Length: 89
Image (cartoon, rainbow, N blue to C red; front, side, top):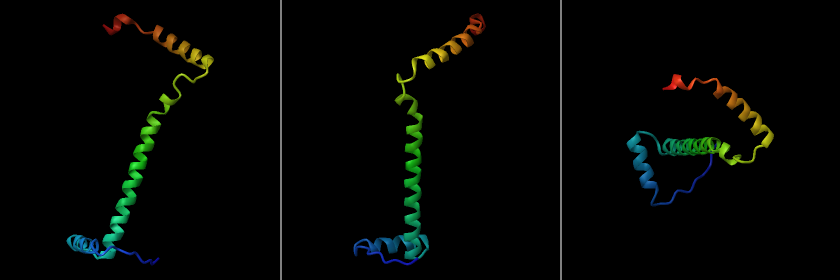
């Protein structure tokens, strides 16, 4: 696909110099820069999503069904009652 992009006059020399330093054409350099930007944005979005998922439990804190909480607590209590406290000293 072809498209036309207007690059400000003051920016083009910097792009041309950077592309020459990387040993690629201006077109290739712009494509590489665009791809890099997309990947960084995706990575930042992934990191934000992981952080939100990690905190998701916090958002439901205190909102659980009391009956379900009691059932889970009973299971936890039963499991901990099997632990020999002297074995942990």
